[in-house]
Length: 84
Image (tube, rainbow, N blue to C red; front, top):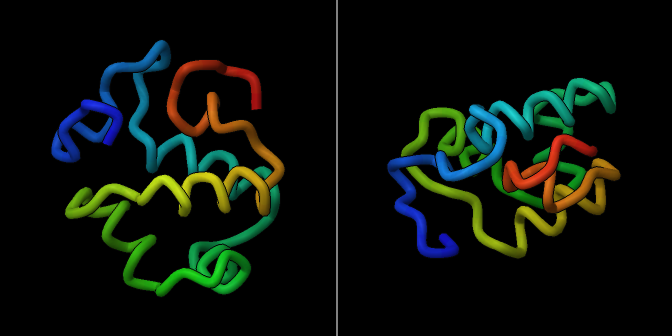
């Protein structure tokens, strides 16, 4: 995604965290669990689990939906900014 290998899990970022760690932090701030986020965003439960296991990367539309539903920025989710 965006020229980065899925296996590297978006390691090219200002923060030294993975996409899943940033998503998890935002999710916890909003008081949701993975099941609730999957339902809120109309994703399959396995999608979020696969991100956690790093077997797949989220699609662009999924990251956009997460940012909207969890009221966070794309820059934060992609690791470009520390501002949520």
